[in-house]
Length: 351
Image (tube, rainbow, N blue to C red):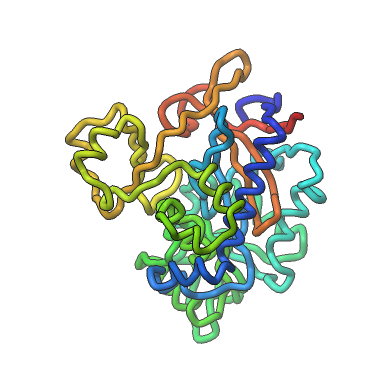
């Protein structure tokens, strides 16, 4: 962690962020919204689920005009801070029970055998966190293993690891639509209904895919789906977002300083380019169909141990339920922990 001292954020901003996350989650069951999008969804995302995705991360910047969404992360990490410790949480009514209870409670009791999966799992930065989740599940009577895709074997009855059947996969892999060759067998089991995958492709398609932020700004789309209050909230919190292929290239170039350019299908800061420092050559290299441009929202600045740092806020959600919240402080153009002093900070809700 970057500091042992919590960073304070206004109660008003916190409640707007929570209301936004709950409003967006409700879209997954909004029939008018589904009718607008269903034909565009990848096949894996057309599989309907009866469970919410675990640990959906809603990332925000705080501004004088209120919180602004940066992205929705389909498999947010960061709650384990090492040495058998989990991220400290504020004492607020929206957080019921202990963090450990909330984390385990996201995984249904019938999911007794859980595989925590990522590609090249032992090489991942978050590998210690995945081991911590496995230990957490084991303490609560579940069987848990941390695996790479090739460790899962497909049989006629489903997936297994070392001969033991797997009920559910806690998916830390970032191939959200299960399209890569190394997880084809996992997709087959999922399509057969032989294994639960969580977070699942449908939540990414309906909420987490950055193309949804484009859709929320399409004239008439949300107006046909939600009431005026929900529409106003989603538009107020979501910065204007446009597919690069759907705007005039010269206009996009001339307005670049007001926008951030992002790959539609990646997460976090990977591939993000701030328009104001971008060359024409870099602009011309974008894949128009795979790039979005989002109104630039500078992060707020806070004092951390006597150093000015940029701040963003993450809400970890399970459906409508808040599981945890955390802040990230950093220096540089986009969120990263490479600079000295960067890292996670606990939050307190004030006012």
